[in-house]
Image (cartoon, rainbow, N blue to C red):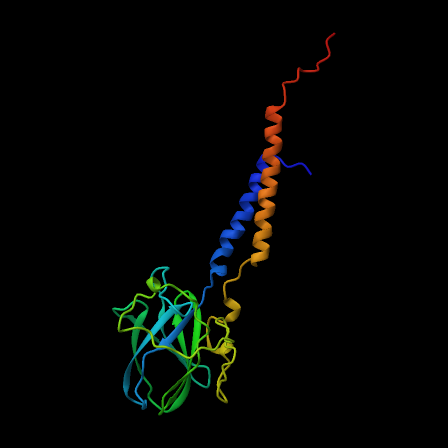
Length: 233
């Protein structure tokens, strides 16, 4: 197979574009929403201010800019959703919103997390309280990536089997809609990318093809000049 230098560069560039497009997905685009402590009992018809944290990889603030939209979404047993927009507080990744529930009922609680898919926090019963789910295994980060002091995200129970892109192990109450029907962005909308093995293979192929073409070019340049074999009458 003969490849010119131009063809090798084009192929290598195309493979590089695939790798660049796959990079964000491989980095792990998921987040977790955790709630600040709430009153022991939430009553209908009363307003409550709820503080909450949106943590990329479950362990640190989002470093990609401003999260938008951010809030809490409550989905009732018929699938109707109400979203309360969050307002940023002084601490990184910390937000608050005011909510009110006019009557009794049960709602599935989700965190709205900007570019990340909605995260299922747990279940709210009014009158009553919130039952939160264990969080997925947080990513390990350095202390410099957790810039909090006394006011910091609450420690949550961890479920190592919970899929950060889904609802593994989350039991919904009878009559509640499935998470896939309740949220606008589901696990099917998660970012997708090239598997690491395929990425390594693509890099290897690109380097091999480029090296082959450049090697042939180099040999042609070093080859002694051969006189033209034109017929002389």
